[in-house]
Amino acid sequence: MIIENSTDMTSFILLGFSDVPRLHPLLFTILFLVYITTLLSNGLIVAIINTNTSLHTPMYFFLVHLSCLEICYTSVTTPRMLENLLVKQTTISFMGCAAQMFFFLFFGVSECFLLASMSFDRYVAICRPLTYHNIMNKTFCLQLVIVSWACGSAVALGHTTLMFSLPFCEITINHFFCEIQPLFELVCGDTFLNEIQVIAVAVLAIMMPFWMIIFSYSCILVTIFKMPLSHNRQKAFSTCSSHLLVVTLFYGTAGFMYLRPKSSYMPSIDKLLSLFYAIVTPLLNPIIYSLRNKEFTEAMCKLWKKYSSH
Image (cartoon, rainbow, N blue to C red; front, side, top):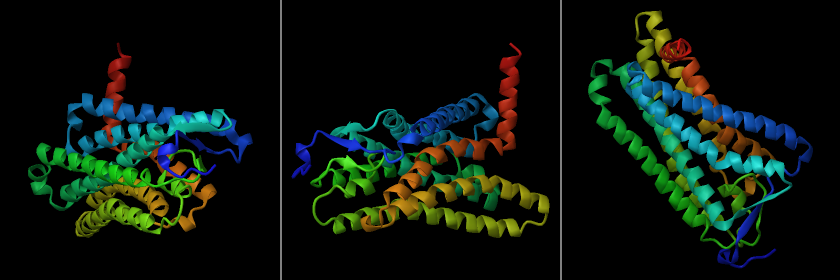
């Protein structure tokens, strides 16, 4: 179907994983369990931190916002994907597709900058411990979170406006949600300049916070190696390794997806990459941050004992 103007459109068709219909029941079961686990685990983090005053520190303040982001981030795509696995093909309205792209980018880019804020928090805690409480006060932490959300909003609005102002010649999206790369495949004519714009913004939205994180951890590593006692080094490494692991997983997959031209788009591989950073990473965050954190596990045990004794 050829459509000369996007304003003539009413809906898109999402192919999802239609090329492997036999795996649909298995994929649905796995993704449904992952989604429920993600919601419960991230919700548990928010509840435990908010009810335990000993965890009301900048690090856990950022962790609460990260968990809220993950709940919203995965909820943008997963319900539609689960629906897609139950039926042969599913449609999404033109406005629904635009809204899905906007919120996916909004929460994703906000997470990029929030992870950078968390790395700065660790930098101050380890490299400048004497001034930590003066620098990372409540007002400054709140400002970092607001800036993260503002950057996410700006990038999402720009990308969504750009994409949905272009003319579409096809309505079939070879993906499980409305993402930029698969939608570029449907645009009429040459999209080279539009792709350059998207990559340029992606460099700012992904690489800028990434290099902020690299700088923070470079300073942290230098400080750690100057520590006289191996116990202090081990504690510092343990504190930062969780954050660094999340950063590697999230930025690695998202960067590979967004920092390349349309000509290199490979539906089968890119679906797996999108599945990883849209579904798997939000599940890993509570595991990596919480279960490996002694303070948090102690708070969780205290809360469990409190409620189980009643």
